[in-house]
Length: 460
Image (cartoon, rainbow, N blue to C red; front, side, top):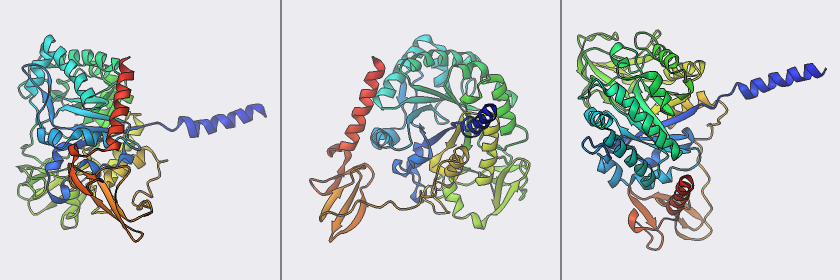
């Protein structure tokens, strides 16, 4: 009887304990989306912190190739829009770690190349990274060098990149920060020449495996963002990175949420067919060959939509335009692979491209698929339900106790909620919205003090 009971308890433990894996869910936020227009414009308050536990800010920070130091390259996106204030205000509910990206497609690969090749510049870079993390109250960084040996780089970049990561991780670990690196995960010969995969993975905490390829945005054939199978497909790439790295738990699967567009040639709609180049700029994002999912989904009914059963991805076309995108089905298939290969988690790229306002259904529809698939125990059925506001105890105008940008008016027991404009807080003393720097915000100050206390504890 004892052995049967133990066997039964072991089975229960395996089902409810061992079978569940704590997959990490990253959300990447492209700060450039603040410059989109109208319904595609995305600001920090659009972030739903329940949908991810790691938030990664992308774009706006690069490397000074002459000094090696970190430098802000988008003053509008980071300084003028007060990234620090909103970074701290997102530290609520589920979000546990904030990371900032150094690099990206808009930054010069040659600057990384110069810095990584010079020991003095590497030292300057690493020191400025630590200072930057503390100054902006972050928890770590993502290095997004696109790409070693390419775009003005040199052949020795492959070796120097590893040297940089090794030295950087030693310092990062000393401060208990996080080091993530974004890489092009495809398996074509030229891409594999960029990275020494075993050593790269060894010297970081996480690897953001990107599959969309923007090395040549004007390529002259129709192409999927991230096909699951086939040449350079996600399956092939994930298995190779897993085999060479021997650390699947560090690999984070990138799920592209944006839409890539092309102009077809002779209305040939099959992937791989010749095309005339990237799609025309749209009214909201104003980028050639690019749309956000929320920009496209409202017009989806006017496109002919197809699903490639082999590549397990959708595509669509209308008039002379052809697009590649992701939907619930394609994302679910990628996450099944993630689970079967025991990867570390997934990253949404980028959350500002999702249907964050819910114009085509539920808010943050694609992000929800990721969380619900990786963490089935999470209950999201009440996410759309309005929360009950605090009752009006007396008439007047009051600031929200959790968010200095929000305020409400109580009149005869009835409450009406309002929101100040971007970069403004509500000043209760003056009963008006005023510039953030001129208003005392206890919520923000408390977050700053907590972060400083945490930083001082780490340095002891």
